[in-house]
Length: 477
Image (cartoon, rainbow, N blue to C red; front, side, top):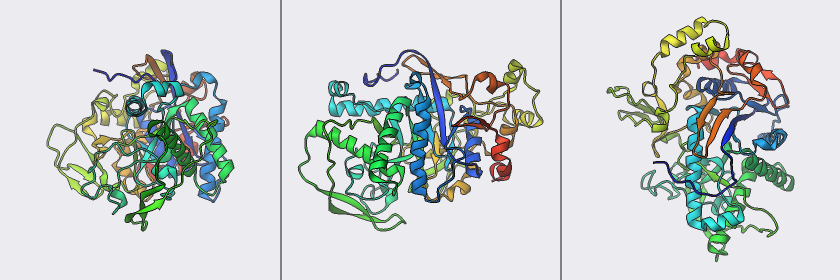
């Protein structure tokens, strides 16, 4: 039986809605091309590259801030009819997809509904409705509040993690090691939510940047907005806090060690006339977004075949013989690689290439139980995408573990196309979700567009143009 939805948030009408893929990227390299291969293998809509062609600033903090302005500029060009569409925004150089977009959409609404239930238990549905408080903008989870400053509201005012108290063993949340912290802090490298709400958040982030400068990353600014949001909610739920002295976790070094001590926290000054509600929450359990920082010991790959797989599951620290259960939403999703021959026939395209024939033969009858999938071993969730927050070396170490790695060349040079213009899934609110394309579908279906994307200022950038020079690193690792 489907879970009852919490009746808060903007009203949406049944009908057609669109799923947008947005990638901040100024130029191409092997890491962007690996992301594009993952999107092509899984049938994501053609992405829009934000800030494409802009000069890359050598200061990463300045570049992170430029990302905010570019995404806001692009979303502001979309008509209001897209405000209730869902946008997925991922960093261009350290993200790979693992599951189809239908799973991402379904899980997004499940996670958001659970977040609204928790908020309703805390504030009450009536208060939420009267004040326009609801959850809708989903971020990835971090095990540390970075940039680290335990006095900031972004570090102390945000909700506790939803994971069990001892999920990382007896040292969970003791402060000894960062990798034993439960995730409860915001990472800005993955964002998913309604375009109208995301645009509102980005506009506030731009104002935050103008006020505080560009000396820190976009994540710092967005965390500050979240911290004020959560402090405002705390005032509604519990009233003013009684003490400014809090026990906080202090980092002792990059390796992950740390300790707790009492600090004087900063209390946000909230102007009653300002809007502090931006509908922010995070994916605590990594159902959609798996970050890597201080999580590498808790990420593994496993098959779910019914036969006794002697290889078992591979993790960062070794090999286990246990096999995971395949989630129901993945079972109900399309097979790992679609046979595109029917699409070619229906659209009158060129006959199957040798590469696509090879792929069809190699993957005929392939099911999700036949491939190894990455999972969060602490929560047991098969994640939708993986985000390589530092250390970045794992981007090279783990690339060959992705289930589509062995089929990359055939995927790109075969006939498979994105989900642009096609039904991805339907949700309980009566909406049918289609992949959004930045140009007309007539142009999209008459060209070979696997692995390419649109510039935010117009124009199509093909796989050949973006990734021909990086194919060896993509196809052979």
